[in-house]
Every structure is written in C-alpha cells, then in structure tokens.
Image 1: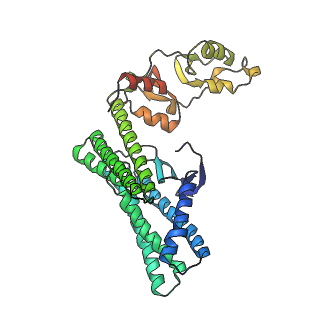
Image 2 (image 1 turned 60 degrees about the vertical axis):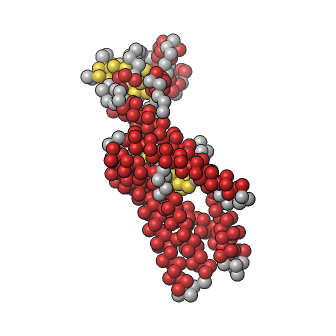
Image 3 (image 1 turned 90 degrees about the vertical axis):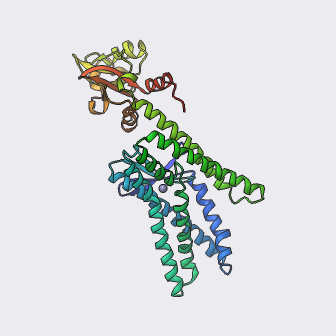
Length: 374
Ligand SMILES: [Zn+2]
C-alpha cells in the first residue's frame, strides 16, 4: 500500500502531512456517496449542484477531521519523546507513522486514546454548529455538512475504539493488558488476536450483507481484511523484537570483519576490497583506530580519473555516533537504529575495540537460525 506514491501537502506542528495516491479512491467514493445518496435522501428539495458542492466540501472536512485525529496521536507521542515521521491519508483512512513504540503502558494508553477523544471533540463542535445554525433559521445548505460531520466523527471514534490491534481500542487494550501483566509480548498477542477476530467478523458481516443483496458493506469487509493483515504482522514483529531483546548485539553480528586502511587509494579499495571481497561496505581504520565506514556507493561517486588520487579517508562516512553500536546492547536496538539512521550496517564495538559488523542480512540469518515462529 505504502509503495504507492504519496504527495506532501504541508506541515502541521512541524509534522509532514502526506496524501497517498490510493486516498483519491476513497475521497471520490465518500464525495459521491454524499452527493448522490446521503444529501438527496436527507434533503430531497435541493438541486444536484448544491448536493455536489456539499458532497465535496463535506468530504474534504471529513478528511481534515481524520488528519486532526492522527495529529492528536502524534502530538501525544511527541510529548512522550517519540519522533513522528509523518501523517498519511490513504485508502483506509489515516495513519501516523512513528519511529518507535511507546516505552510504557501508560504512554501507549494516552497515545491511543488521544485520537478517538479528538474525534469526539470535533463531533461536539460540528454538532453544536449545525444545531445553532438550524435553530436560528439558516438554510440547510450551510449546516447540513456540519450535521453529517458531527455524526461521522462519532462513528470514527466508536469504530476506532473497537478493542482489537491495530485499531486505537486495540492499543488501549494492549496497554491495559501490558500494565496488568508487565508482559508486552503476551499483551500484544491477545490484542492482535482480538484484532484478527474483529477483522474476520467485519469480513463475515460484509459477505452476509452481499448474500442478502446489499453492497453497502463491501467496504467494511475490505477494512476488516486490512485489519487482519496488520494484526498478524504486528504480532510477528513483536515476536522478532522480543527474541532479539533477549540477546546481545554481539550474538547477531558477524565477527570476521575486514577493515580497509584509510590511507589506500579508492582504486585499491575498489579492486582489492569491492571486486575481490564479498562485501559492499568496510569499516575504515586509521592506524588502530576505526574512523568510520566506506561503502561501494561512496566509491562509485568518485569519477574513474580520480580513483588513483583519492584516499579512502576522503570518502569515508565518519559519523561514528550513528555508525557504532555497543556489543553488549540488547539486539532489538538494531531494529530502531537501522530504521532511524537509514544505515544498512553498523560497526560493533566492545570495550572500545572493533568486535564485528552487523548488516540487515546478519539479522535475517540470525532470525532464521533462531527459527522464530509464532
Ligand atoms: Zn486513531
């Protein structure tokens, strides 16, 4: 889903807001349902033009409401020290992408509940607007969208509070089980199972409705399918994290490290290391000290004519703070570090000395050896 392109729409509180191309589908669907079904049925005396404009405006305000819902999750997450990458609108609504999970059940609870609470507050504001406007005799052209937005935001809050992961209610459930049991994996397992149950129930409901000749609930069936997929992968992810957490970085790393001297030329690096050797990156040493990492990509950026004149130290990434990880740290830190810093390999040090290197491939083969299953 997220492989489809997204477009940056702007920022709110410093957090980028993106619209995924798949969102267009649901935007058209919502606008059309409002323009051709909801408004004509609720207010039969209006013209098609009024219904069309109302449909599009209401759909836009509905998706603005979703952004505010996701923003609330994001701001609570950020207050708890979690970096929020972006908020994305896509086929099945909105999602706030975070760099890591909350560290405590309390934080997860607050973060999860913030979205539905925001939807309820929005519902109250929209309902009050509609009520006051209709009470003072303003035409329904003006207040009908607000009335609908009041109803739909309550529906968003209620749906999201269904107690199954990855829905907000599922996160609330997980935080409570986690707080009670102190066992995050166990809590995740049950919150995800509840999520799968809810997902399959929605799919069953949709099938049942179709068999009875109604196509209205097909969408709900698709959402249900999406929930089962996410619940399943969230649980697998957690199992991997737990398994890594019980081990150190050193046990995942490869220890047979080849080091490139900083003083050799790029030409030597290319022929003796990249052509001869199996790796696409090497730690670089100046004497006995590791100064950074050099990659095949960095070497490729040097033009052929410069190979013999350029020293490896000139093209070495020397940002050691982001390249080095301590051998004794729990191995699940690797997941966060590689994601956060976009490195596909990290240098492992023990007591200040080079102890190994760890790549994504090392992690994959470690997980395969450990025979992670559910
Ligand atoms: Zn939410």
